[in-house]
Length: 304
Length: 287
Image 1 (spheres, each protein chain N blue to C red):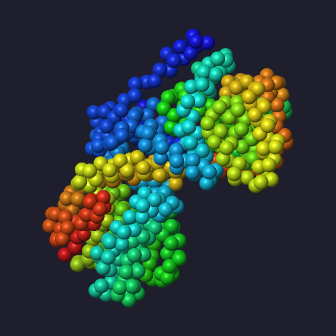
Image 2: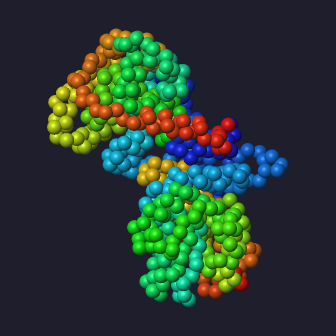
Image 3: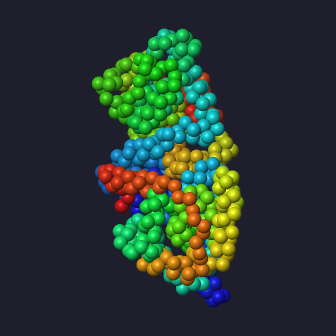
């Protein structure tokens, strides 16, 4: 039996996977339908689905994980995601050259936004920098709003929460050439069309503005890669089912990491959108910087 | 007896287990293909991790039915073939294995059961469901048993658990669940029932624990061991039968009177979720 979609509840049905000759991983993987001539497909973890369905399915995943998102991040990365996010924001140094306008995409629970505002405040005594947290998912934004209520930024002009699609930011709400800093952390791999996201990023940034993306990426070291794969596919879905009662969403998350382009390919996509990046290598002067051997990677670009 | 066993073994020979290597990953430990709907094959490492995690979570939050189910699946191993053989030894049990009935609001005509006279099994079941505020639809499917037939036996046990509650007129609070777990351990031999019995009482107040061990455990042990195995009961064919007659037939008797609390809202929530799912636009529905 062929099935294009799967519902991401605990009681989801798992059909038999496709033949060993084609790509598939372990279990709970549905067969792709034969494409009609005009439909475009994209990946959803290791499944192939019609493009128009990806948004809904990703929405379903994040509705499901929203309430335990921060706890699960801590459990899955054993707290390391905090180090990565700290590193990401301190690299960007928001507020160094005066107050700036930032936009944080897929920023739902407000991790990056909070770090940006704290950095500006603590390092540069800057209380005018603003961050617009944008997310396609209302549940995630609600979690972010709740978290910010516990901070000093609640009810100030420094923070706002807007529900929108990163691929199509409405012009009235997000006029062109507005922002100094565009960040997207661990969100871009969930978007249906990465080039569209990059295009919108280019549009809303001011000339001289910075684009910065923190995302899971390819590990090049084979030993580390083997251990990382083992951990991802054995431990994380089980953690998801134990802690959050939701194995499927976490299976999707680890699969989506594998489907995201590697560092050079993604850096090229950033260039194709019009940004100027560093040279096509890792490290100082390069278009990206690997964290923890490539498990995560920071890509930056500037709109000239 | 041996003829039955041979027939059983031939009939339920393990399907060829294909171990597959995953695309672009070198996996140290390989996992097999799913063999039935809902099957999640796990390798030994994942099984161990799941066992530890789910047993902790079941104790920490007993309302996590999925975790209780998981540890049940993982520990049932050696007992399920014995249960299956017990089913094969009775005519009713063989029919169940052949027809593989399921108990849910979709497969059982609840409206018809509600019209049956008082004292029948069907009517008693409906009354019990309402009084406790639960529904058969929230039973977690079996995920971690590797053989499809044994997975069905486990599923059947899980779905019949409520009927045991109903038969003995026990509510769904902790001490009654434990009493029933003691009974199931004695009658069916499932290790999970044993663990629940062994550790579950730690969550009770000392007064309730004392009552459990003074009144319920002796009942459970005596009744469970002397009665016929309840896994062989084809409940769906006995809705019109008198409850007392069923008890006589299988050699069971009532426990001491239980403490009934307010009904749960589990059935209500499940109904709401179903309504929402039906009302929502069917953009991502399965064919």
